[in-house]
Image (cartoon, rainbow, N blue to C red; front, side, top):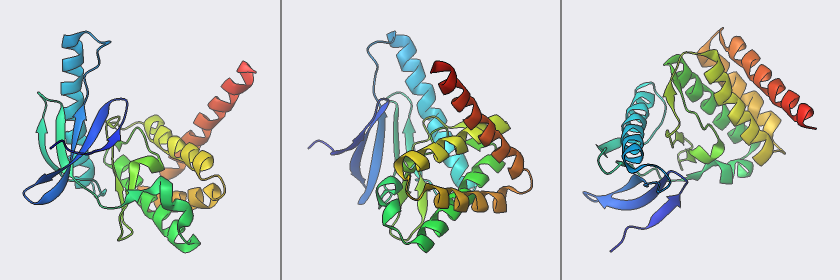
Amino acid sequence: MMSPIIAKGAEATLFLEELFGFQVIRKHRIPKSYRVRLLDTTLRHRRTIREARLLNAARRAGVPTPIVFSVNPETATIIMEYIEGNRLKEHLAELSTDSRQMTLGEIGRSVARLHKNHLSHGDLTTSNMILHPSGKVYFIDFGLAATTQTIEDFGTDIHLLRQALSSTHYLIWEECYRAFKEGYRSTFGRAAGKVFHKVDEIESRGRYIIERIR
């Protein structure tokens, strides 16, 4: 019996499976026929190892992420914990104002923990967050994550989240972003001001490019 596919992206396919009586996710990086075979194998091998390592690093930093049970670089596969719940993208607008603010505040604290531990997510959107029935938000898909200490990378993370909020959750995005900033500042500390200054700088670069294109 084939395992059900629960998500399929450009880089990987996610399968829902059972391991020792527990539901798990098998993430398989799919081969790319347009790449030279040796290069493709090497890239999938390295990215699989890197993602598993960074998932574990984020978890050690206090950020809710799926537990990694096993990694097979040869097949470019990660077996990880299945997190019950739904993508935050689909349910953020349904939350009460108080719940939204609490949720975004906690997301801000989690992102600050990532950054304080020299990690960037790389694709920080509400599509890559799972809202557990308990209210805890789990961060998923560390395929673009990296180790870094640069304000530019931290600012890019937050810029991506700000874009996701303003485009997908445009009716409530300002309220959500304020709560996120408060949570982030409370954990990251005084240097948070530099990070948000960089976010504004990145935003202004984008506006400048758009104006030049016009």
